[in-house]
Image (tube, rainbow, N blue to C red):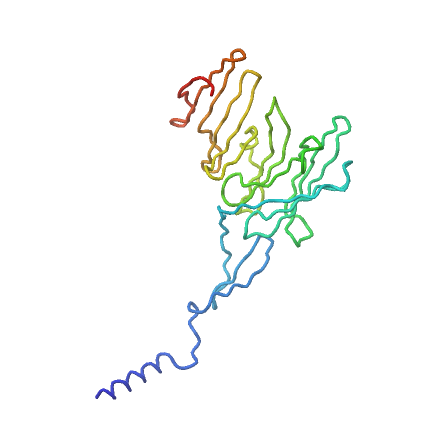
Length: 263
């Protein structure tokens, strides 16, 4: 009796899964053929399915950098050429900064930026009409690649010019993964001398409005926009007396929350 049961089971197994049967489409290995479609990487799908374009998410632990090559001469021959990988899943980007020397002021004036992917001859984005001025001794024409919105993709900024005292203004472009482009942030452009802290995910702006007044502003990102959450203002009354006033965001508005002697 026992032998008859095992024989019946064996016959049933052979009928359900005959030798040499192909695996079902969902059970096959994940084929990962790469292709370069101009926007990064795309991956194939399991056997029997059409390829699906994946969404690219930022690696917030990524700390990339950039390198630049000085132009051929200080007189304005040739562009400033920079290179950076803004995220591990994207190819290297090559940035070409067009510029000239203003004969009246001696400033270096960056007029445009062309951006292309490594291995491609044509740029995928051109930013023109900049007129960004810096002293000629400032490295790379004041151009930087840095993660300004803490999303894991590096963004780019360019010194636009100085204002009163140590204040510095920038033109800022954030990488938008959905569109595969750098998009200018007018709100960041208004923040003076911004510093970006990836640990606290805050923007710190140190500014001075006059010899008698200066301060520090702190911003965080809220729904894609920098929002001030804290401010400290130092006001000097004579050479040795200074009062510091504190402001904090409460109920969506900045309110004075205290004051004391400057430390």
